[in-house]
Amino acid sequence: MAGHEHEQLRQGSVRRYVDEGRFWSYVARDRTTVLWFRLLPFVVIGALMLVNYLDDELVRGRYVLVVAPVMIALVNGPIITLIAGMVSVAAYISGRSVSAYGLEADWWIDIPSVLIIALLAVFFAWARGRLIDRLLGITMVAETTQQAIVPEAPRHVGPYEIASVLRTPQGSTNLVGGDFFDVEASAHGMRLILGDVQGHDLQTIQITNTIMGAFKERAGDDISLSLLTERLHRRMVAINSGLSEWHQRFATALVAEFRPWDTSVTFLTCGHPPPVLIRDEARLLSLPALPPLGVEHQQNFESYVRQTPFHPGDMIHLYSDGMVEARNSAGDEFPMVKYMNEYLRRDYPRDPELFIDFIRQAFFRNNFVITDDLSSLTILYN
Image (cartoon, rainbow, N blue to C red; front, top):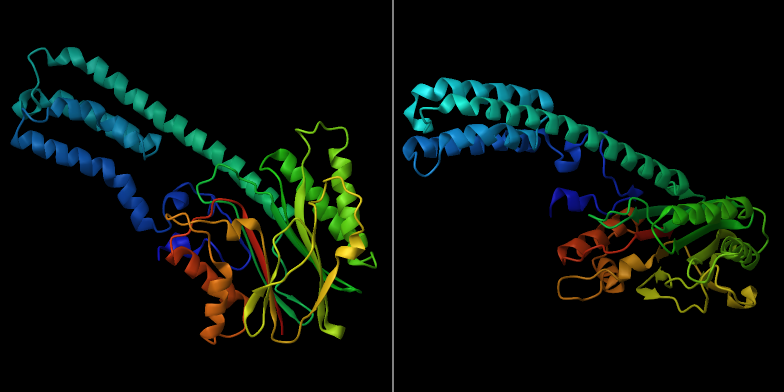
């Protein structure tokens, strides 16, 4: 499996466009590959000049010298491009006595054109570098915003071990996703939320921040899960108030409360995929679902609360629809529960990180592609 695929899903992972603030780390992770990428134009130019030497009718050397600075400017900076341009102009001038270049008697008339092209290549390299720096700056702001709004989940809360994943699609132009999660310790137990806000724009950031803020504020105080979820719903309704039907948003959410003193976990879901309980086997829990947060309804939240036993050694897997809606080249959806049961059959340790890593490997080994935001929380009662 390729190295970049290994980084797709991991503990606390967040999609990264930039590593250590360098453009070349986006192209490749090792310096050798970067070096070859930079040298590629020189290799091509050298090969063309060799062909010109062998057959000057097939490749004209003077044309290679003219376009050489432009080719080099594509992947190198202005300084290297300037040096290459100077060498190209010098070679063009000195080549008047080298018949292999195919220069005509009035070769000197082309010198200003060659010089202008070389200078334009230098300007292009400089402008490209400035543009890339600007785009990387914007990207890093988006990444920082994503991490500030949705920080990594803690690895341990009381007797529970947690592994988390948050990704947006590889190759997507959306820098900030709509998925979110949070884990908070409280006197009522460990409370967590995992959800998905509709959209991938600035309003999505605002809504995500509002929901996360409301959850952090009330998770430790609200006496019941239904009251906490109802507050989140009212926040979404307030956001939509005054907006036209076409501009209103919603958010799916799964809210859970883990209580170690009575070995149970309580769920309340609002339009979100059901969790998976992993014990002797992995199985989807059948939960009644309210409409998503923000969709007007007058339901009794308490009547949708469900409780299930959660004993030491058990695991719970919460996930967004990006996990189960991922498809391979044949159009098949990812059979998540199938691979979870395969993990259990192999008698691997009950470890959330190893569990997620196994699912990740199955995901990419079978050529499934992330096409939507993907987030998950795996909780082990240790």
